[in-house]
Length: 144
Image: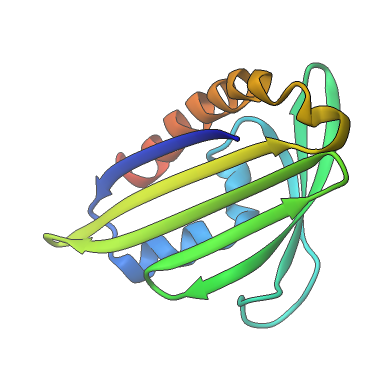
């Protein structure tokens, strides 16, 4: 399983940071690998809410459906996508810090089936995606 992790502090309150990060439709604002996100349901965000995420990858587009599997405002949310070939899970943890928040964003990516054989190569993919996302997330959450 490939993992990318980022920890940082922001002046945003835990509630504000959680609301922004738990709603995957906001990811297009900070993750350059994400082309589009569409929420599948209406109403309050929570366990079972789902998002169709279109990723740009090697001049192609891939779509994954992420579901909220854990939802504990304003401290933790887990978003998971699973296909026959891939498992992607993002865990966002938020704790109060001074007058803002400390955020830990951890993304795990694992190949399944045929892709299980090339699972070690997924480290390169998640590292490349993670660096771009980290840069955008820090610009959005720390600089603004």
